[in-house]
Image (cartoon, rainbow over all chains, first blue to last red; front, side, top):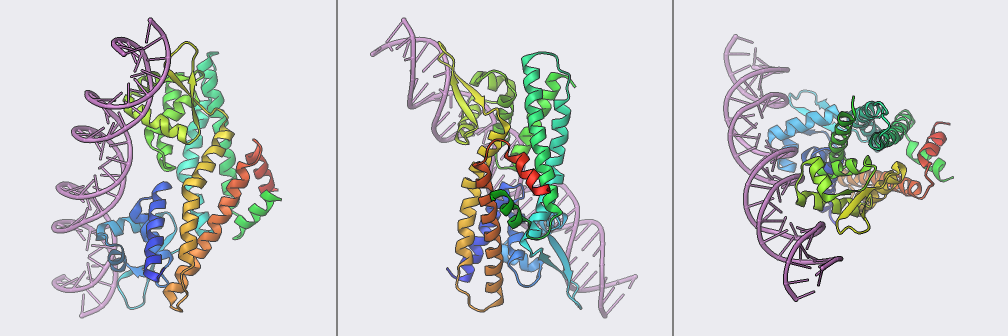
Length: 167
Length: 167
DNA sequence: TTTAATTTTCAATATTTTTTGAAAGTTTAA
DNA sequence: TTAAACTTTCAAAAAATATTGAAAATTAAA
């Protein structure tokens, strides 16, 4: 496989995968492109490479910056803005874990807590609702604690966590 | 909050969350409904409760069965089919982890491996592509190993893993 | 200032995904 | 067998989501 094929394969795989964790194709592809680009890229560069419109590029770059995994950079003497991705994949994973906890897990935990706290009325359906949402709440809470623990760890946390798990 | 409000809140929250991990709203809602139902439900029951069509219900029930988290059940003397969800939330999490590894993580790992194995030609862009896809490959591989480890554990793995991580 | 370069916004459009519902298929009982 | 009960399939419609592109806004140099 040559460079261009490999690059395209990586970008489209990353794009397809993105939709599976809640970010859209263009956003994931822009991220993939920046991740493997040795130099910061301008909006024009990104539009050309991925064949997407200016508006699309602008909006998705903003979202990537909101996620904290893409940054603006300025080249001296140039007006144009350039963009780079977080290049350290472990830092990337930590940032994504952090954002997903904040955006999805924590709001869900809140709903589970509210729902599991309704009044017990003795009926089988109420019992079951309370029991199951309590169980989900406990699990989600444990997961969130684990994720936050992991976010605060040093860079080799994945490897270390693995070692602990399998020993 | 009364039972009906709590139930609806849970079902719609679960439905919204579903889209974030790659299953559609109806599928997630059917699952939520079955999870809190003390009795198995028929297709009619589900259609009525969620106000969705017969075709939709049929297709999504099939997918839930493919995921291994919903099962068909037969009541003696009745022709109609009834459905239940896996009720043990830890078993549910394990089943989902297993399927996600199989459907998403493993195919991605294969692509990353192929892409990171292209010939080094000395150029900066090729170097960067190889370096980054290798790093992603290593991380994805570690995650997959962790997930598979976890799948093979006993029912309290989440708690135990947490204890190990924070000690 | 004014102007030119660049980015952002957003209504309109295109695309993708989900849902419907009726016809076709299947299963079981009579 | 036939018929009734029930489920599945799938083309068409609806809904949701993503994308475009040009006008408006912003920025910085002249």
